[in-house]
Image 1 (cartoon, one colour):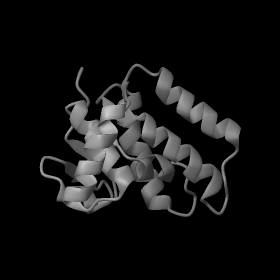
Image 2 (cartoon, helix red, strand yellow; image 1 turned 90 degrees about the vertical axis):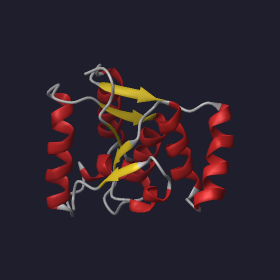
Image 3 (cartoon, rainbow, N blue to C red; image 1 turned 180 degrees about the horizontal axis):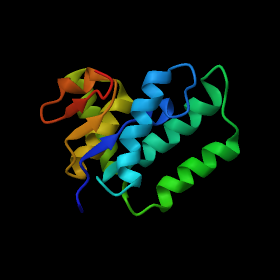
Length: 143
């Protein structure tokens, strides 16, 4: 189980704490529980963790306390069952090319470029715009 099955997108991480989306919250928690139990290995980008921190503390009606956000992110960073990936300076130019070619939002293009660098093709996400990029396989766990 050394290679990650898929990358987990920011929206999936956010739903774990979303009391207003009970069904998505349960599905997201069950999906991530598989990783915590050692059944699968998932990847997460440092970009996803940063986006998660901003979304749940600044962009929701009921922001989470920073202590909860820090604890959650720290648990992912420290847990060996998660593959943590990051982008390099050159990844940004790759992302610009992906953005231009497939008309993706820059941050999604950066995530795709990062995934490609790390040999990851699947992403658990609600955002099906990733389908535009050949070889990128978005999986909507809520569908």
